[in-house]
Length: 67
Ligand SMILES: [Zn+2]
Image 1 (tube, rainbow, N blue to C red):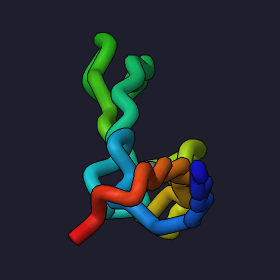
Image 2: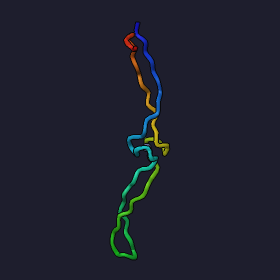
Image 3: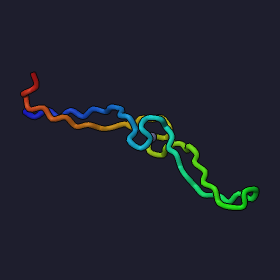
């Protein structure tokens, strides 16, 4: 008899390491400096939607050997 258990659990988002934000670098031209500067800013992580966690479906198969 094979028991198949599917359970959902939350894991820390691998994209943002649980912070909910990722740093995105972009270049922009500064008129006052007269050259390009690099701007780094946090944006909401698309993988987890800013929650810092992702839902993972896990299939655990039991073979009757679980103590
Ligand atoms: Zn994330």
